[in-house]
Amino acid sequence: MSKPLIGRVVRRLRTEQGIAQQALAARLGISASYLNLIEHDQRAVTAAILIKLTEALGVDLATLSGHAEKALETSLREVFADQALGTEAVPDVEVASLAASSPNAARAVLALYRAWRVAREDSAGLALPSGRRLVLPTEETRDFFHDRANHFPAIETFTEALGQELGAQPAEMNHAIAERLRKRHGVRVVVGPLEGALRRYDPQNRMLALSETLPRESRGFQMAFQLLLLEGREAVESLVADAHPASQDSAALMRIGVLNYAAGALLMPYQPFQHSARALRHDLEALAMRFGVSFEQAAHRLSTLQREGHRGVPFFFLRVDLAGNVDKRFSAAGFPFARFGGSCPKWVVHQAFTTPGTLRVQHAALPDGARFLCFARTVQGQARGWGEPPPLHVIAMGCDAAHAAEIVYADGMDLRHDPVGIGLSCRLCDRMDCRSRAFPPLEHRLKLDPNEDGATPWRFEKG
Image (tube, rainbow, N blue to C red):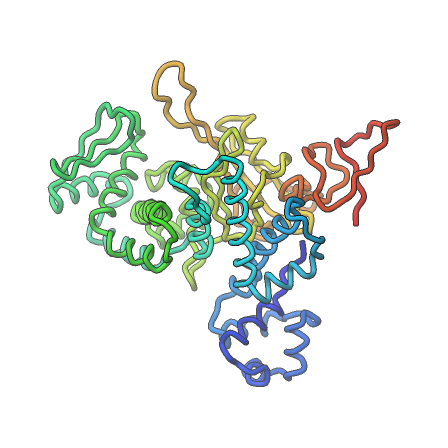
């Protein structure tokens, strides 16, 4: 996987805005020939020129970083590596060029591939009773959040205004929300046995029932969700409508996701939370205690601090179950998640399951040399009754290793030493010496010798 190609991003942004190369060069104070070299990634971009580029093109540094293009590139490599397509191998340089220079075309390729996968599954008898769906609601919703860097300024503005009206400190927020529900909407909150649900709202009787199995922080979140459902509907519906979802299911998933986002923003206001995160050096347990929320809620909120001009450390966020199913995934850190397959067994995400309740930390390196500080911990839900295992998930986060000094979990680690080498997934990883490999890489020929049993599960030839 190639390194971010800023020049191609600059060229695309310039042409999209209709700015001539000579005109942009004049704004930057450089020659047109020098800008041409930059756009073809034949000259490095200095810090001074980088700042001028953000001003001249009206974008932020995150846009120029190439993170979005890197994520597209990762997904495209997965698509082109699928042998079921029967296509010729696509060189990495061409994949990188398509992602950086023509992102709309790249996204169209991904959409076609997803449609093809669904159609193939349908033909194998895996269609849902309601019929074919060429766009899976879960995939469309995931893209909805990813394309917006998991940050919604309109929701932040709305919840900040609502929070000011409530005027409560974090320790008093649950009570303030309950009082708002009662006084403004005539909604009574009751806690008790609730069969088959954690929250149930009865609009006719104006009653919000919360399950007695919910811990205090989860009750507060559910009340905040209900309040936003009653008062923030216009702001939420505007965002969903602008996304033009392909189905009612997609719209419903987006709506619930944004409401969850809004509930978190109300309980953890942007500026106070960001200030506390910096002061506590992103200690999740300390943040959770300060704002009266759960470990998972605090972690999720950290991944949303992407306000232009006031960005927090860019984190990725992941929630995965014991079977390896990922039901939440956001990346502001440029971490290239595998989109259509599993993840690396050497990644700390999977190690965390072996030490429940203990936070695990890892300095990890991807095959392209990018290094990340990753940390993960299990969270356990409530079992419905005796004999039923409680749901167990791992919450994982991470950021570029360059931010390690800002993260308390890096204390005591010597980041000068070699990190743990991980890959995106076995089928996309070129590491030849990995003893944890489950599958050979798709693009390389196997080296099979019945007279020798190697130290690694699969041996193959590069190139």
